[in-house]
Length: 100
Image (cartoon, rainbow, N blue to C red):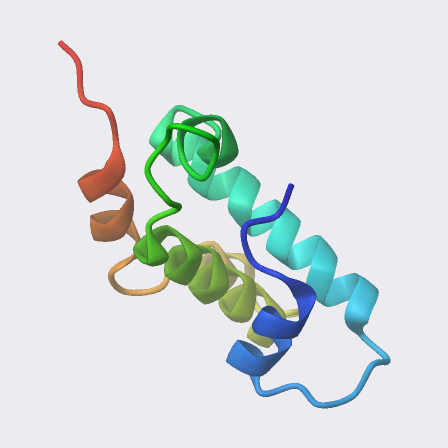
């Protein structure tokens, strides 16, 4: 389940038309999957359920930032598109379950 709705993603991206809804939804799902791979766990299995803490807004922000970045850099050179937006790694690191 996506932690960012299509409407919230479109508002974040400042997209007012419906023609790219499927693309935006796919980008949100991929961005969430990417954040989860960096975290090492799925967000909805850790946050937002019964007896769990709510989903941290910062994780939703990270998903939005990545989805917007990928939306804006479609067709860009691979090295530009592969960069994570500023601050995303810090958000992820704050929420990782560090074990050694």
